[in-house]
Image (cartoon, rainbow, N blue to C red; front, side, top):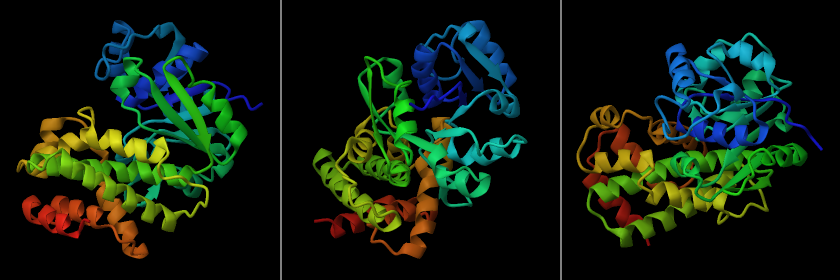
Length: 332
């Protein structure tokens, strides 16, 4: 049986905090890299993350905090990356330590901008991490609900099924059910796309389209997602209706916890991108994901009308009313 060794969390946001809560409940020790020393000091003083999921209390004696990524990478065998995708490169730039022998788990639901690679591809191409040492966490999982210990289902994707299984054992609990998959690339791309579709759902909601239409939008979105995954990473045994694909799409499209949906709703109501971002104070991964996916699809030419519509609204400044009306005419 594979042993994950000592586990460290890289990132300080709400999903990082939720995963830290899950893991430390099993291991009673984690490393935790946070960029800001003032946040670490506040965390140690208060016993909880000062900025995210403030109701989740930790025994800080079980946590080794550091703002030095190299120190954390040196000391821990399994590294769980949970930073917003636009910032990943900046954190990794500071690395002097080799990571190709580490077990890298990415819980980042986004694409590395400029490179247009999902995170596992980025770690493989740029840091030479072999695919059997790369895993991802997917599934419908709002950090806020994990914090409240509401029942959630997570999927660990890894080319090495033993390593995937070993990592599920540090996630499983009475409120987390887990399973494994070998479809790392498919899980990562679907978790990027569902953010784009959640923005679309929000835009339509902001434009006062109702639940009847949202169901049609989601039906078309899962078909669009399936077309894209079949082209980018064909897997004969992939079932697009599994919770890691369809489930994650639905929770992100429908839930009020979804930043991407909230962001889209503001755009639909007439906010500019800039003012919506300022008001939210949190990153809507789908804003960056939309641009990256559009660029990737320029080479693949998959029929993706929802992606195109969101791109036109966010980046070409086309009126949401006009763009969504054109989209509705393409649906059946």
